[in-house]
Structures are given as C-alpha cells and as structure tokens.
Length: 192
Image 1 (cartoon, helix red, strand yellow):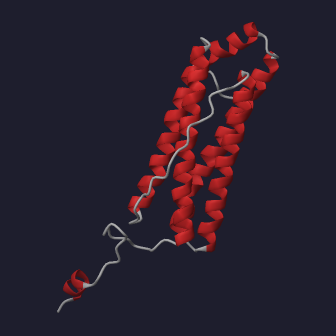
Image 2 (tube, rainbow, N blue to C red):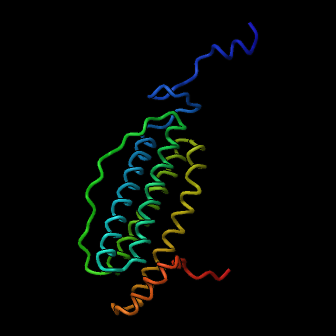
C-alpha cells in the first residue's frame, strides 16, 4: 500500500453534523461563540427597534443609520456562524427577546448603543482569552479583526453620543446631526 492510499483510508475527525474538522473545539469556547451569535442577533433586533423609534419621529438620518447597524449585527452573527461551520461545528440558534422600544430621547438611545457595543467588545475579548487558554490559535486569529472592528464601533458610537449630547436637546441641532447621518457623515474626526 502506498503512502497516498494509506492517507486516503485514514479516519478524518468529524464534527456533530459529520463535517470534517482539523481540530476539535473546546466545549466552553464553542458555547461562548454560540452565545456571542445570540448577542449579535439581539443587538440587531435592538438597533432595528431604535431605527423604528427614530423613523416614527421623522429623523430619517438616524433611522437609516440604525437600520444599517441592525444589518451589520446580523452580518457579524453570520460571520461567527460561518466560522463554526468551517470548524465542523453545528450552529445552535437561541431565542432572541423583544428589544426595548420605549426611549425618552436620542441621547438615551445613543448611550444604550454605546454600552451595547462595549458589551460586545467585552464578549469578544473574553472569547479570545478562552481561545488562548484552550490553545486554539485558529479562533484567536479569527477574533483579531472582529475585536478591531468593535473598538472602531465603540469609537463611532462615542462620537455620535457626544454629538447628540452637544445638541442639548435642541431640535434644530438634532436635525443637523440627522442631516449629517442622512449624508453618511457619522465617523469621528481623524487626526492622522
């Protein structure tokens, strides 16, 4: 028997759905990634509810921004799901609860959004630490760009929260920020 034919007959490890996998995944890390998918899906629902709140108040720039953010969170959940499938795992979707829809102000929404982004960053950092403890380099490499993206998202939401706070509840000032969002101008100033 040649080396090639021996390799063709050797058993290949498979995941729960029978997909080939190169390295098994630590069960706690897998559970954490499943929970993170739910967190991203929950953030998507929350951002869509926020988009509705702004649309009901004729603030189309904010509504469009939050609708886009809702889609982005769904994409993040899909990215983690794709990764789990690539690792031979089965994706288990958990329940997503109805998001909050009663807000007192745009500032309250932006503060909650910033906190939600910070919580997602914390989740990713915890997953990174779990992956390191499990010596799962594949997962740390996967998480690196996601953490970078989260830090940028925190920066963006801190900027928008600052802009809304600067408005001090004045409708005319809020309409200026809304117009900027309509024009796709939502990034913080860059000095470099």
